[in-house]
Amino acid sequence: MLDIQKIRADFPILSEKVNGKPLVYFDNGATSQKPQVVIDAIATYYQEINANIHRGVHTLSQLATDAYEISRVKIQHHINAKFSHEVLFTSGTTHGINLVANGFASILKPGDEILVSALEHHSNIVPWQMLCEKTGAILKVIPINEEGELIMETFDALLSEKTKVVTVNHISNALGIINPIKYMIEKAHAVGAAVLIDGAQAVPHLKPDVQDLDCDFYAFSGHKMCGPTGTGILYGKEEWLNKLPPYQGGGEMIKEVTFEKTTYADLPHKFEAGTPNIAGGIVLGTAVDYLNHIGFHNIQKQEEKLLEHATKRLLEIDGLKIYGTGKNKASVVSFNIDGIHPYDVGSIIDKLGIAVRTGHHCAQPIMNFFCIPGTIRASFSFYNTIEEIDTMVEAVKKAKTMLS
Ligand SMILES: *Cc1c(COP(=O)(O)O)cnc(C)c1O
Image 1 (spheres, rainbow, N blue to C red):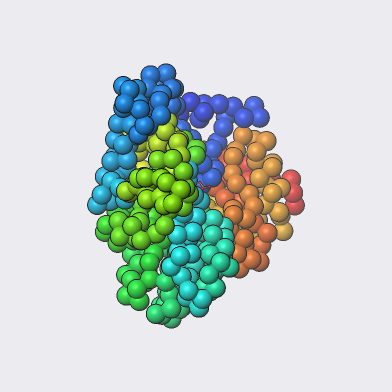
Image 2: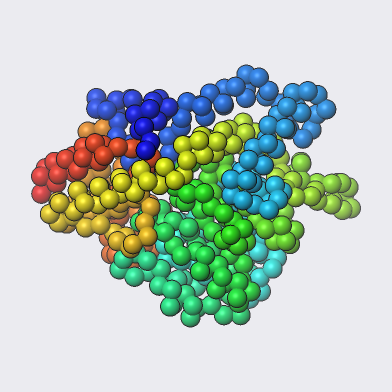
């Protein structure tokens, strides 16, 4: 079993007070808190090896380059990519998805189809809509049922030879539902479609195995998995990354530049134009080490406990409804109280030191499906405790009394 108090001591912010109350941080779905090793590693980079990478022959440049490339290999092993050049550093999930969608502009023809799921974050909807506008491709949506689960019969029926891309999140940010992506990838491949998995909400909870999943792309952000903001990874299968054109032009991504013709650098550099977030990329490796040190098995056990307790306790409240009641769930509880606006509950419990997200969670189509303006979302991390959940439940009860 994890020693939660010892783990909490790794995160300086968790002992802060907010509005005079001990912070209860349940907005992990928006961004996770950072352990001291990650915070320290940022300072160490700037204090000891700061230099631009892949450029100079000087010692510091080589040290920075080595640290950056070691981090890439670390992440390669973490997600079990076949090659390190299939691991691209990005600024986050949004960047990764846009890179892929932009690349497909040169591949898709009018009438080709892109399947997105009804559970997507806006950043896995809008880039594909932009791509459709550019190419004449058609966006089709895999619907959800009342439990917030994707309807697989409809997905199967939507697939055809016209389907060129299927894009779906591993875990829904708004509801916490875990999607049957392995099944979906297999089905999509059977009609020759490429599959992008938005793993932003999955990587804090589990270790994805991209070869076992057999996905073509897997995008995620560093900041939701204890890493720095402005960092992320796009995994792409070598053959796809070779097929797609570069996303941005600039330094680092070329072999040779003349005004007549420029040839592009090999992978991964072809997709990494300009000076990247060097410190961030290196420290993302530190965050991955930290999570592996705790162990994903332990993380999942703790989070399952939190999810179960929160679900049970919240349902004690009269008129409270949980959205996303499917069986396969990560540690996220999205809920509303009858007749009360989620924002009002969020504001009152904030005064009591409790941080939850209220609103549409960048997933308006889901809110439209349930005919609600938004939800209150409590998203838990392994460093959260049962006592914190009890504190939240009491606060929600108090808010309900005040507002009804
Ligand atoms: C957070 C999130 C994103 C966007 O991530 P950024 O870090 O803002 O680029 C995309 N998809 C899902 C499911 C998310 O939770």
